[in-house]
Image (cartoon, rainbow, N blue to C red; front, side):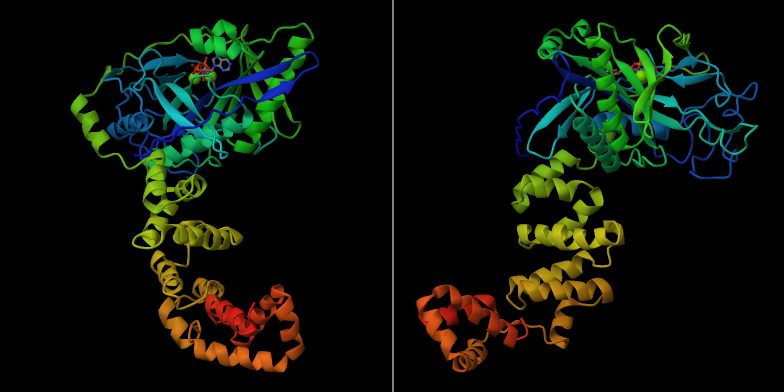
Length: 503
Ligand SMILES: Nc1ncnc2c1ncn2[C@@H]1O[C@H](COP(=O)(O)OP(=O)(O)OP(=O)(O)O)[C@@H](O)[C@H]1O
Ligand SMILES: [Mg+2]
Ligand SMILES: [Mg+2]
C-alpha cells in the first residue's frame, strides 16, 4: 500500500479582544446499526412505520420481559471497531443508565459504561488541501436508542412513539483531537464514509441515523500541545457539549458560535461551566439544556438481566478476514493502480458505489481519462438532476465504450461529449451510435486537405496575413473543423495547416 504522509492542518484560531484562542473538539457520534431487528428484541427497525407499530413487549418494558442480545448487532459493532483499527474487547458488559423521560419506558437505557465492546482506535481525517490529522478514537459502546416524544401535533397534548425504542446505537467517542469546525465536518464525513463502506450504519443524517454530540472548549496557543504530551486534561479549557446534531453545516456553525461565547466569558473574567447545550440554528446561538450542578446522577450499575458479553478471538479474526476494502486503502490503491491525483482518488472513493463504478470503467483503460470522464462528465451531469451514481442512466460499459472510441481516435473529445449526451438521454451502444449517426472523426488527411484547400482558395487575404502572423493559423483550423462538422481530427488539421501555411 502507498504510504501517504500528510502535513497536519493548522488549528482554527479565533481572535478575541485580548488573545488569540484555539479550539479543541471531541465528538460522540451516535450511529444507528443497520439491523432489521432491535438490540434486545425482534421488533423491526423500519423507518417511517406507523407510530408504535414496531414495539415488542420488552421495548415497552412490560413486567417480566427480558432482553435477548441480537448477535448481528454485536457483529456490526465489532466490524466497526475493526474498521477504525480499534482494539476489540473480548469481554464487555451492559450497564443501566437510569433517568426518567416519557420516551424511555424502562426508566433506564441499557448502555456500556465500564466495559465497552471496542477500545482505542484511530481515523485519518483529510482536509482536501493535502493536510490530514489522525483523530484518536477512545471507545465504541453499544446502547439502546430512546423513543420519540412528539409535541407539535396538538397544542394541548404530547405523544410518544416507541418505534425507535431499543434500536441499537453505537456511540463512537473520539479523543479531543479535532481542532476546528471544518475538521469536525471532515471527521463526521470520514466516519460516515467508513460506516457506509462497512455497511454497519447507513449514515443517513436526515433520518437521524447518524448524529453527534459535539464537545467544545477553548485554550491559548501552546496549551493543547501540553495536553498531548502529558494527556493531562487540566491543560484544556472546560468543555460544553452541544447535543444531537445531525447536519454538517449546523455542526460547523454551532462550534464557532459556542467557541465565541466561551471566549467572551473567559476574556470577561468569568469561567465556563461544564454543561449540555442545544444549538438553535434560527437564532444562531447555543442555549443551556442542563448544567453540571443539575447534572443527572445516572446511577449506572451492571444490568442484572444480561450476562457479560463474551466473544471469541476466532470469531473476531473471521470477521476481520471478511472486511471489505476501506476508504484509505482503496484511495491509495487507486492512486497507484490508475495513476490518479490525491484529489481525484478522494472524489472517486467518497462513496463505495462510485468507486466500484469507476473501477469498472477504468479496468483495462487509461485511468486518468476514465477518472476525467467519471468525475467531470458523469458526476457533473448526475448532479444537474440531483441523481446519485446508482441512478446513472449511463452504465460503466457504455462509458467505457465512449472512452475506447476516444482512445482509438475514432471520435474527437468534442464529439465524445455529444455522444455521452445521446447515451445519457437515449441509451444505446456507443460504437453503433457513432456508426449510425456518422459521428466518426475524419482522420483521412485527403478529406481534411480538400477542405483546407477550399478554405485557402477562398481566403487569399487571410493566407497572406497568416504567413506573417502565425497566430492566425488557429482561424484556419477552426474553419476546417466547421467545414467537417467538428469531426476532423484536430491533430491532423493542425499539422496540415502549419504545413500549408508554412507557419
Ligand atoms: N476539554 C475538552 N474539550 C473538548 N472536548 C473534550 C474535552 N474533554 C473531553 N472532551 C471530549 O468530550 C467527549 C466526552 O464523551 P464521553 O462519552 O466520554 O462522556 P460524557 O459526554 O460525559 O457522557 P455522555 O455519553 O453521557 O454524554 C469525548 O469526545 C472527549 O474527547
Ligand atoms: Mg458519551
Ligand atoms: Mg457526552
